[in-house]
Length: 174
Image 1 (tube, rainbow, N blue to C red):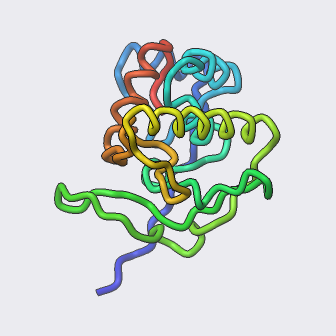
Image 2 (image 1 turned 30 degrees about the horizontal axis):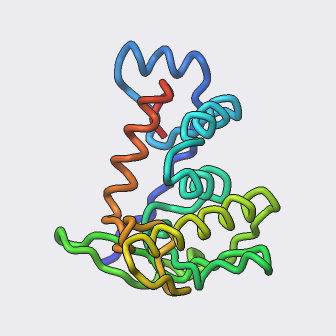
């Protein structure tokens, strides 16, 4: 069976007018995008969050939930100034499944700027120290964003945590 082609929704920027409409009606665009000022507010709000480097990558490098959940340190080349998206963690029938991204175009190299590299260096050092405290050996195969004992987060954790942080920042949803 062949399905008719669908058109993808275009992103709508959260202008003041759209924010007011959303606050009044609860209706929001299918794909909503923050303004630069809103993004800055969000990044300022999450600056002290333990997953700040995760939110930084999501916001400024476009990584998706499953890509963040599956990102390992061996996929991040800080000296080469890039990370490679080669896997994702997702849920299928309430089970977490790890595998390659859904499409070939999702497998990609992502350039990293100097500030992002600094943030990731600090995050890796902090994670290594955390692992030592729980007597776990750090390895390059470790998940970049994981519980203090190294267990990977469930992919939905990122969604729920992000939604909570957005509410805390007083921003409209994305």
